[in-house]
Length: 116
Length: 112
Image 1: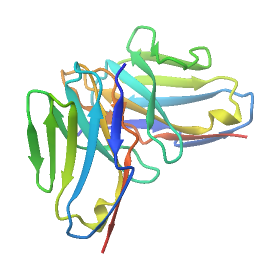
Image 2 (image 1 turned 60 degrees about the vertical axis):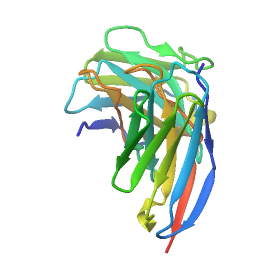
Image 3 (image 1 turned 90 degrees about the vertical axis):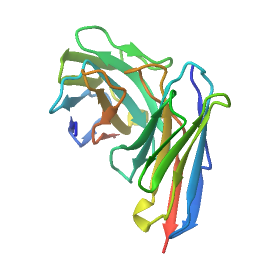
């Protein structure tokens, strides 16, 4: 099956710094990737839709200048949390849809971000 | 936009019993409904999905039913086992490849 990886799996940073999270589709090309945020014991909240070669589409209430998304290739999307604060601490998960027409989305293993 | 409601939030069953989780959606244009299983600290895993042109789909102990008119769909797990214990999420999307909108999740506990 399709495999999506994320790096890093865990990151701890100081308040005010920026953190970059990578999402890769390992064995398929993904024209569209999605970024979700999940707080403990809560559901996945869609943050943005990332399309290869174009600007990301952000959900209402998500600051695009704070959560920078780049989808430079068919296998890589990055999420950069800029000027991180403790309230940004969360589990960030990406998903990718195969380029070949299908509804199925495959999720990455997630990145646990802790901002001190 | 789409809104997905999921019930119950927690469900405890004895091993061997059946478990049913229900979801409703608000946007009649939604046409794809997957179910994901998530274990603590891990990624959501797709367990079954259904499209709006189908009323029911089954895969071994797992089945999903869809009622388009009522805009609800349900997950049925039969002969539950302790390893079925996890959080289950339903989701909906409007068209192929668009973002999934998730329900709030159901924590299923199967005791032996």
